[in-house]
Length: 559
Image 1 (tube, rainbow, N blue to C red):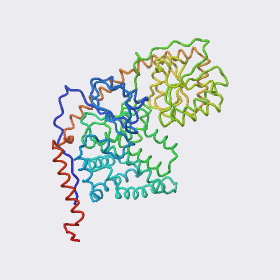
Image 2 (cartoon, rainbow, N blue to C red):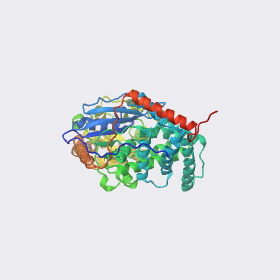
Image 3 (cartoon, rainbow, N blue to C red):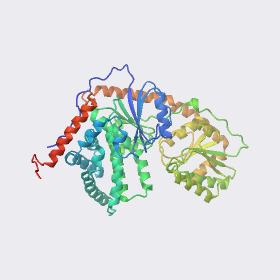
């Protein structure tokens, strides 16, 4: 009977004294330090603002070779970029493996090993993904056991094997049929649909091959795929897991899937995968720190416990956002938007609202600062076409990137945000610090931020947005009054110092938790064997396995 090699399970007994800095692995995806955006800004302020903490950055990127956009402060020990796409094999970005280990991984991975050791785990995982209700403990344990398997066996050989494909097809067929019955869709999946979905899963599960870093806390900047390394570290080694959610990952993923032009099978699998993975993140997290109270109901609905949750609002540095002078009364009314050109920002509703405002106040100008991220160029073109169709090319300006965020806010009488999904947006806090009134949509933490000092309208309602804009255009005194209140509220409740102080205390609390988990297994250490010896051992094992598989149970075929 085949037995899987088990990693060392010795107790944690050698934690260094608390005189050193706490060590945190910050896990990001599509953000810091390789991409711009609100989450990247938050990460940069957190890392640079806490020199008392030593950080490892694990950045999940779209492709290899992405350049860092941020200068790393001295307290960052290392930055590891993990590309989900663009690599032929996972081993291409595992640069810590030497040649002998590559040979060992590949030749440890026979068809028999895959069938007996991996397929049972993979089947259990797929059954969990398709199940009607999440079982986050089983889901997380299975992720850990698969990660343990991939520590000894080749990922690509395993996931591209016939046994893995057959398992995926069998469980996909059964799972999707049950899913269709629950929803009453009555559709069946096609081979091409399953192939496309397996390609996605192959990329997502490659995160299970990452070695667990030697840190005190795993901190993820959102739920979802970011949580896989943290779940493995928590389940396998007892490393505390801190989960920060700026928006609501599951909600935004479901909104995104609703816009996809993919098959029902693909959408169903992705929705189930994201739902169960999010539930596992909430289950394993020692602490959940949403950026607003709005997130609580989503987190509680999907398995989080009230005692896990502590809201920590994003904060900006008041020194970077000084109060702007009001624009002269003879200046045409100017409304500013600052953010990326993205469907979640719902620029189309903003353009429609501008067209309605133009009918009553034709002198009003809307200046939109920001550009479409890579891959969203189609949406920018769609917005340009809508602007042309509505005849507001002179009233709505796409101004590209602003010189600074502060200068962008100072250029307008007030600021508008038309998003259909948000966390606790920096654009709102920064505008408030500049003394600018904000018209925002009732999503995420926006109503919490603007309570008593701004105007809130329902998302995807251009008429309500236009009415709010006209209210401020026609009453400049109200605009100034609300701007002053916004400035005061931002300084007292949403400063960078308050945010970073709260996270520093959370890190220290979780570090203490990690020191108390003496029964947790310690991270394995590599044996200091020479490359030559390891290579020879791997070759001998491969020859033995090759001989055994071709001679049956020890019988030698003479012909």
